[in-house]
Amino acid sequence: MRTLFPFRPRLLDDLAGYDRTRFARDAGAGMTVGIVALPLAMAFAIASGLSPQAGLWTAIIAGFLIAALGGSSVQIGGPAGAFIVIVYGIVERHGVANLLVATAGAGVLLFVLGLLRLGRLVRYVPLSIVVGFTNGIAVVIAASQLKDALGLPIARMPADFLTQLKVIGQHVGDINPFAFALAFACVAGLFAWPRLWTPKPAGPDTAAIPGLKHALRIGAHLPGPVVALATLTFGSWYFGLPVETLGQRYGGIPQSLPAFALPDASWETVKQLATPTLTIALLGAIESLLCARVADQVSSLPRHDPNQELMAQGIANFVVPFFGGMPATGTIARTVTNIRVGATSPVAGIVHAITLAAVVLLAAPLALHVPLAVLAGILLFVAWNMGEWREFAHLRRYSAQYRTLMLGTFFLTVVFDLTVAVQVGLVLACVLFIQKTSALFTVERVQAKGALIHYRVRGSLFFGAVAKIDEVVQSVETGPNEPVVVLDALQLAYLDTSGLDALRQLHKSVLQRGGTLHLENLQQQPREVIARAGFAAELAANRPSPEATV
Image (cartoon, rainbow, N blue to C red; front, side, top):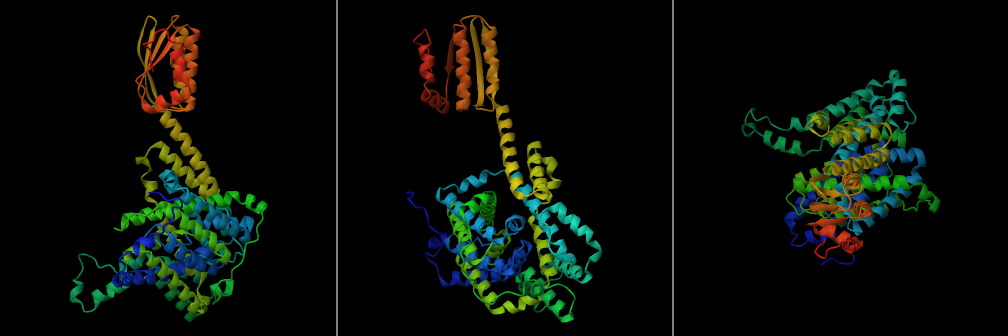
């Protein structure tokens, strides 16, 4: 039975029958993912125009709340690459304070969506739009990291893509070769790391080499971004490379808990931030539920509850701004890592947050020496993995509608911004859907003998297809007087108010010629619409014979 307030975290169900074995697996998975999240959280925050601690505490607080209150057993929440473009644009146009207001507002919207059980509506966003803006975001992320990857002395990067390329081109002669070497080594290492620890099938038997099998197992479980961050940071510090570090730009990471502070907001500010708020909420919902669906496919655990997940995302995004955080959502890479290292319940996500908090509080001073070029290299790798580049090569396999939506959303995301891309993409998707659906509605002439005009209608008679009824109207107006018009509606699947109005106009034309209109074999939905509107009574009142029925 559906409850009045449908709030039930998956954690409550997963704790039933929970034992030490499962806790050991969850603890190991959580600690691994917590270490993986460390460089990503800092990189996402810096790329968004925020301080690294904003990303770290978002990963900690939002990661804990999403795991504890969410509708998925294994989803890991935190800052995500998809938000970089949006957050950077909001910070540039409205400032950090208004970003916090927009994030809290998006949290309220997400919670309401889940509370009203509208989580499944997110699936109605066409795949072509999701692929388009995902690839577009990946391109914009990569462009935004070129400044730090090349060590360019640019004080502040602009928000839009084309201007970024122009500014980078103006400083191309100022490339720092040491920063470029670090970024290149980071990207190359991240690509090579998983292949390095995977033995080739045709290679030697690893069991015959003492310790090799164990070393391969350990290496395969070491997160590549963490290895890249640690080794390249140490190398940069040891050799004293002249590259900009996190400590030089931000002064390091405070080794303390974040302070609670209320964002300075007014109703006027909230109204001005309506569009950014809606964008954060929409992207957060799409990303979190997409991530949860991927988790369902990869794991054998119970499927996620989309409404509970949205409510948890809403709570997390409402809370983190009070601690200086940024928007959070489900993160596919960390969630899949969580599954592959053995997570069985949301406890792993909670341990991930605790692990990350412990690292921040105990080892924050070490972050002073992290080169920004290394973080840029990590984000370049993330951008590459984020994009679904094969879709471009496979475009010819898809319909013109799919290609139009995907390419249109992609170019709008890159050239303008994600808000414009999603809005235009959804409107265009609706227009193309209406066009396609209206094409499926047909009006077929069966017979025209004497005063009898007989047609058969198929499909959905809605506002996009009403023009096709004009063929019947024209037959009536140019035909004999006192016509008997019969519409066989056996295959009429759907009728809306616009379609009903078109039938009324047809009936009016028939009456003007002194004839009668008969609707035969009506299905349930069209019959109910006609009866509710009183049209059935109108037809019956104008029939000379009592045998004529609807």
